[in-house]
Picture 1 (cartoon, one colour):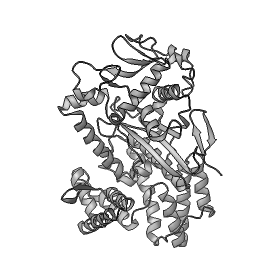
Picture 2 (tube, helix red, strand yellow):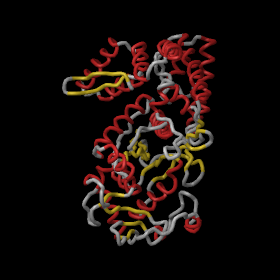
Picture 3 (tube, rainbow, N blue to C red):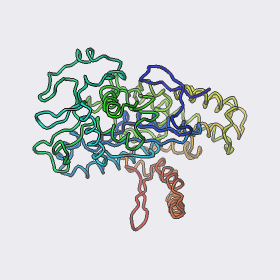
Picture 4 (cartoon, one colour):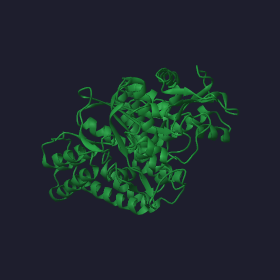
Length: 478
């Protein structure tokens, strides 16, 4: 069975094959980085972490681009409120994001472009659109996209221009020819810091949000690539506008597959900062270990709504404990996955059907039952290897089970102290220093993949490394 992916553009499952044989190019809209990431953000990044892991497990080379929006109204406002520069704010929040998602086992993308590094490409794209009559300058210095001049507008959302216009809740903004038109270049406003504007043929200003992703995806992956992903809330207007910009400029399809993950919900409402019903990753990790949180997210299908509650996380913790208990009974053999083996074949069939993690995890529990009955090292090895395709069960079973007992019985101190104690139970100082030495040796040998693996293994245990000219130090995650 070949891989099938649900394509939002066609609203159907489609057989997947990349444009370039053996090489998948994927772009995912990342974070607007002005605050700590919450579990809704983790769900999006986890969804595409699983996608890229499965593509690699299927034998593909993957170029995975996940951008960072580091210039935006909210970013400017937050930096001014805190009395720091925009760069200081975004550097701080990017470091926090990397730390938080690293603890969850979310692998770094191949490329992580920052919007502020691609302003020249954005200006070039806006110039192309203006040259084709798809963009116009407003009397106030903005440059807007003329939606009605792009024939394909609405194909991703499935709505006609008249339907979209009927849903308008605001009057035509001053300087726009149509309420549906959106800004490509924002003219500089009084009171904004100098670092929030760039010189351009259209006057001093900064890019609109939508043009950022069109420029970054084209610059890093080409004018047409295989998969464009993001949260379901980005389908309209952000992704619809990306299509209008990119395809309006190049005349070529932007992406062949559009993939969107479902929301995290709290009390039947989408988790979001605007509603104030969000839980940061750091808040959640004060109560639950990182692998439990990963398991909680991964066991739901990426397109489904994910209901957040302590009860669901408690259940995920007990379920993960059952899997680790099976692995603690016998040392797993080191096995290469034979995809013809019945359990592996079922796992592959589930993942090949639009990344069906619920069915794939059901296979893991069937394997765990077999291990419990047979004490087979080979089956235990297969359980660990298949779970590894999802970023699960790669820790030492005994250490995991001991750590769970420790956290359940003694996690009553502050988050920082609790995490530090837990880290020392699982990875003592001598073990940590040994791994730091191994990482240094790997870097000296230019084996950067091994160095990254060691850093991520420590992150998974709550240990953060800090490199400096004087060497590498460590501390427990806060």
